Length: 299
Image (cartoon, rainbow, N blue to C red; front, side):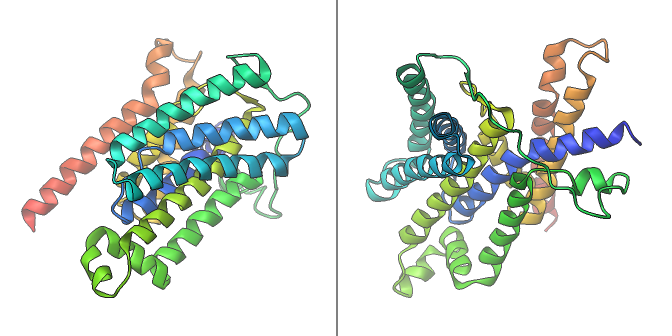
């Protein structure tokens, strides 16, 4: 049991940036606009978070810079897709390439390095231990001892559920994906709600990017390393519902925690061990697709 608890604790940490990105991506998906730029939004947020901390030494300024950068890129993406009528998938890919290239160029220009930008003197994110719960086996590892970013990701997902299901804005946003004509008949513009969805995804990814760099204490080129793409998969694995999204993110976190735990312990090539989370995601997506197809045949 004691060996299991560190893995559970690690899984919760691993799922945090995925949860931020997937929560933002869920708004776009329900609005009928799949946002494939989550990867770039995470990456640019991580870079500006690290850069702001380097110059100011302030965690608050670091988070603010991350939010501003990610929101700016999401605004550019939304303007391109909704105002200029460009293809949303091509615009999303362009945003990912822009984030990857821009972070390298700015890192070279501002810090004279194309490699790791270490944040000297950055304090580790303080954990919050919940009284009574922290000493309970398993539950303590899951719910206690995490940084405020972890709890913020849960709060944002809960807030997203309330907004999407319990507010007029959420109802209209979901109508954009299924019955956009109904909004038009009411004199409402679907593009307005889709634009808002892109900005929400930028906001969530900005926080997720900040977590990536501050939790590591450094910025590493391409440190998002596929998390934005995984977040897209989690949206569909979770049935496009907040509760399902949380469960899918946690299962992926467990898979990656298991991958980290087994390195050096099993006589298996390291490359295969590192691929375990992504193989699991691939097989899970295939299984869900097959299940959905069979369900449609039965109905």
